[in-house]
Image (cartoon, rainbow, N blue to C red; front, side, top):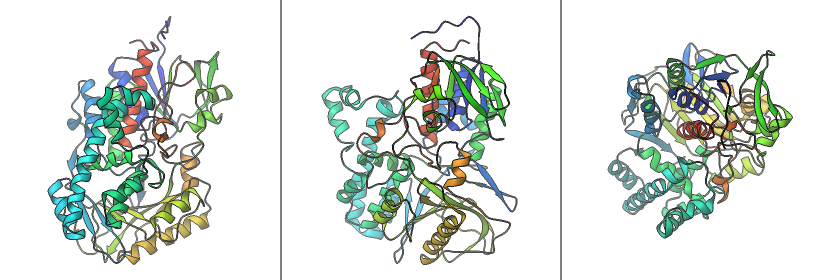
Length: 500
């Protein structure tokens, strides 16, 4: 398809999340006029920062992986990523804790993790981890270019594109086996199954329903986790500054009322202030439910289908406090004692289990094995429990925080002497922050063997309307959202909707 425009109109990108920022940068790199609209007063979308006692706390994504995605984005613009964002590579990936058990640290270096697992669960499990690490690397390599960096393929094309060897490699990704069942064969120790099953939550999914393919996330983390100086929100600010450096325009505090569509073709964007922006090309970086449910006008509902199931939401707690009794790492996971009930509770009963798994990001601690801080020193804490994507009352949020505290205290962590007013965010608040999401933080979950193929691709059914973000192929997470932005920009340019 080719579009012949008589005059240059800017491409309008809606939403300054990571996908939208990336899409806008990719267009500006090609000297294409672009206007980025953001309803909030800051960039980043879910990559937000909250303040407690005057301390900025990352209250969204806290793990930065696949650095090469952003290095390539900047290189295409003739820029050096490391000159614009400072970061340090973590040696310690995460600390993992269970009630009545020793803790287990995993490291970037394979030998260190094997030694730690050997001391934790025995030599045979260390050997199992070695085999698992090799398998996850193979799964990642199989899907890196063929799926994650590609426009959304269908499963048949994906399997056949590499010939017979491609079919064999694709079968090894185990799409027809759940992650939990695969891990039950990979590891004998139930704690290790629980540890690696957690990677399904990175896509907002249940490990008991998600395909084993998601084990590739284990390889992604082992390949490198980076500590962004200034916090993850600094990445969003850096991308926004880079867009403006390249000549792109950002309008904060600018909400979109509707998309004007004539004969299934974008014609303009109507703002909440009544202004209309003429354009024949829009990249939408928001939850696709906003389009499917008519939030941006009835004609836009034809652009994509409504999701049948929502992904995980969360209840989060930002604190500036003193910790005692347990030595936190920068990333620490305190596992609940009934993982199956945890996810059955969320996806079947729409409730948080009594003893949920809690993730704690201690943002003043380094990414090394030595994570100690001075006694009685206050530190920035971001804690999270998974939750169903539905309206949640203040009472329910308070109950979730109490269950969070119970999990932490039962494993030795005490948090007290809080400074300022801590901030609790639940599904209802996330739903207001991200319209039509109902609080779902990852779009639709990746459940079943077709789960990865059900997300919309960058091209919608409305001409000139393109999609990116965590609810779009290739999926949720910081690097995936960035890849989706690049795919949307590529599709738009390929279709002839932009001229420099």
